[in-house]
Image 1 (tube, rainbow, N blue to C red):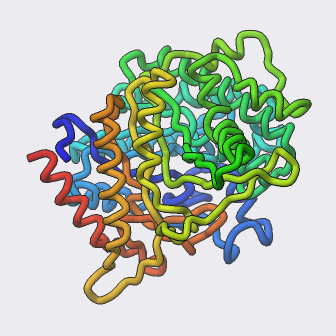
Image 2: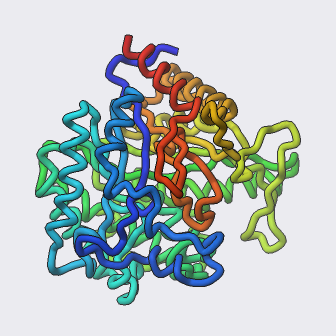
Length: 439
């Protein structure tokens, strides 16, 4: 593999998963603070109250990134740090933290990719209906404007949302993430409102910082029929619509996929005038989060799904199949079927049951996972996919949402009692890989 010299190699994190300091310097509560405090929602009753203490250790973490040779770092801003009530009075201390972070990254010659929303909605906005309330969309645009005015002269790459599928479906239909709702009609309205807010935020970003490059980050799962029947083919197509096309089609084709619109029936979202034009705002890049595929069979009701296990495959600690070919095929599909703008792999990685030994963390399976997916990305580029960079998930072991601290995705091991950072073998391999690519 020989990637272009200007290809960006980096790692990714998100605010609630690593920062901690949830009650410091004027930060307001987020929906994840409340969700974590609700019994039975998060493994072990864990929360991001301390997490990796990145809020206080960001300089140490920048030095760590520099030692690994990272060229780029993707992070998210905590909306409740900027506007503790979601709107209204701005919190200068919150913006100052991210300014120090960005300046530190630039001083280390690490390019920042800033994500505006990685799931930590201010609870004050959730109390008023959250993403189902159209007022939240305007509040998001105001928040984007405030951050861009402060950092737009130094941050080139901006993403509006991280994984709208998780924000809408996982959190509002399946109830597995904050705010823990189980209402399909609500979830689909939220999915639409998120895309509208993305368009509004793009306008706000470009009005405040015209030289930036802006896009959105979607998560993708490759769907394969779990059997040879026509029903299996149809189920895989439906799952692709449920997971991938429901967000891709409005962004790039200006309409929701008709097959899914028909399936959802009375649950489809209400669309207001100019919504689709906002959703279709041109993007400078698309972020691609990819981890796995599903072998899909139909459920009993024509709406749900069953998933087969591949007996020949390796699975991660998340019970996700290791399937690099899905990344290659998805990148090529985005290029061929959607004429996608430049692409970044904004998340890819694996959780394994890492063990800290006196000699470090021997995570050969993670190294093999990353190497195979780098090869898949390289193959996609040879097939025409306009890939510009790759961000490994995650820089640090961290708070893994509903899984608490039970799953470790990091290339750097975190001892949560001492907050000591210990690069795993995969991190050292990644360091050498980047050096070879830059040579």
